[in-house]
Length: 429
Image 1 (tube, rainbow, N blue to C red):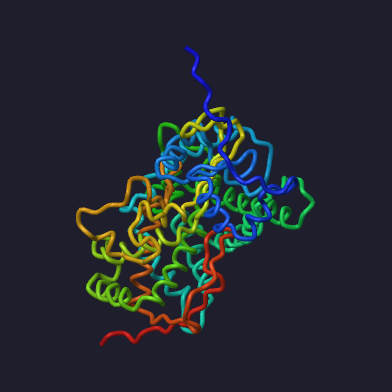
Image 2: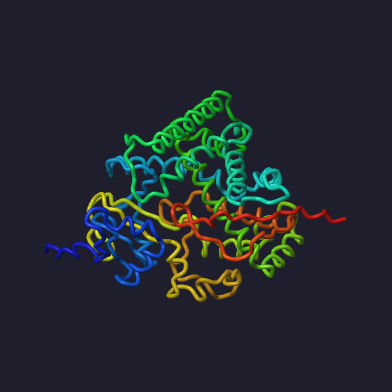
């Protein structure tokens, strides 16, 4: 018996006859999505080829079916949609990720923690600090160290250049093709080429030298195995890991600093916990600090808007989707939806420590879910919790101008122009 087709498209705002909803969206991205959700419900059409979903089950289905019916595409440029090429790239990423997973395991990452403390203290000094640039510098060095160890020279600068080139493209809802005659497009292409060339040189040098006891992620990826990874697989995987492990955690730590300046009660609890722990503690010794980090990631998820490309004609929650369509969801709205969270706009680290309570299923996804869940989840949580503990224990943090900060939704979710004063505490006698 032939199945009856589902509804063609969900409802949505009509927008301008030529520009669609892009202009209104760019004026107030979060506000536009919130108004559409209030008007049309959990599913609406942003434009003729883009659908937005909002409920935990819809979001989970989208993420769980990634690499099958849906594909993750991370390029900031608009190119011809080739679902099968994207599927091949996804399989390549998955195979490399499986080989490198042990390199991101917490036990291996713990060996990185001692160097992490040195990098953190060297990156953050006394005086007035623009928080996001300082945290980006710290994480570029920390990420390069974890991935490449002693071969990381020059990589933090190349990573910073790549992020700086991607940022203006990601802030524009209109995507430009690779051939577009724009300085921004040329800058992006040049920075990508330079970073890949640097990674090629490092991987080849390490492979020729041999590696008997892997001490970083590259060593793990080069270790002998039945299905040995090619240099190209390793280079592309490392580039993706390092870019993802730079902008997102740097932004998360910036939000952590912001909340620390607002909540002396939270600072006092973290300080007491850090003082009772070892110099480089395991996360098990920092339960409140870890709960605070989780809560900041709920309130301020850096990757606040996530999308997938439809690989082949399919349905999602009864709505028909065509090959090449885009499906989006707002993690920021999901994490603050009062249907799933009590006091959704309040910072309450205790919600993660209360017995017999847990978030509504699939309503908390700061690292994504499904086959493309963030590969650095454990590493990221370790880095954020440890640096939070060290910051509170070793530094006094204050804002020159207390109060709320403007929130920028144009790319990653960031507090615009956050500045703090840092003062290193005197060592205990």
